[in-house]
Amino acid sequence: MDDAQKIGGIDKRWVYILVAVGALIPILMPMGLPVKTTPAVEQLFDRMESFEPGQVVMVSFDYGPSSAPELDPMADAVLRHCFVKGLRVVVISLFPLGGDNQAKQALYKVAEEFPVVEGEDYVYLGYKDGGLAVLRRMAEDISIVFPKDTRGVEYSEIPLLQDVWNYSDIEISVSLSTGIIGEWWAILVNAQFGQPVGVGATAVSAPKYYAYLKAGQMVGLMGGMKGGAEYEVLLGNAYPELKSRSNVAIKGMDVQSIVHLIIIAFILMGNLVYLFSRSERKRAGGRLGSQ
Image (tube, rainbow, N blue to C red):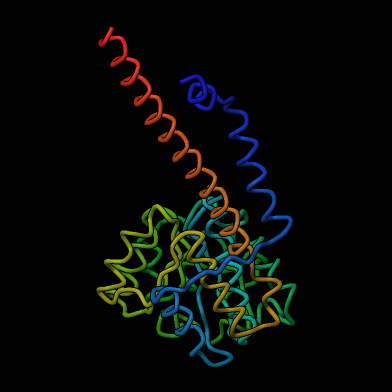
């Protein structure tokens, strides 16, 4: 009984220390734990891989800083995939904090890794309020919604956009989404205008998107950090030169796996302590009854 009480009364600070160490070690010394890819992510990667150089992809940053740990790695991987294939990229945002906070930082960071030119190979049109109304209007004329890019250059003067006026000029739209915005792309842009749509969603939101995926309203889905890690694995396998760059989510999965194992170990230990204590109480009660 005393031993069980000692173990059960362990200072909770030791739990925090073990979790911190478990999170720090994989960051400093990546373990490279295997990440198994799933059809939902493979479908999106394969669709992107099927495009020819010069074709246009729209990437919408529909999330803010709170979702960045899960969605930033997806954004980086998708942008790297576009640039390494020579695809032209149009970047927008429908989330108030998704513009300069997420889209601009990610786009310019990844663009520096490749011989690409702003206005020719990629363009950042910025954030636009309006949600569904914006998506519907872009089906008619994107230049009406985004008359200038964030540099102040007129839409009609941007070389990349000379032949990009609506969804029919874009091969696929990828929404990196928190909340409901990814659903807008599926139920409006795909269902009504026939635009192929891919979604990267936070882990808590991902389950609801599988219904759209099965219904054919999305061509692929990345769910949470695991989905981002899967895309990184596929990208690294197809383009070995990118393995050292596109691995943030893979490292994150190492951390997540180790921390989960530590938490599971404490849960098992707590249950064993409880069972041992209960057994001891029963034996003590039996001895008292016999007296």
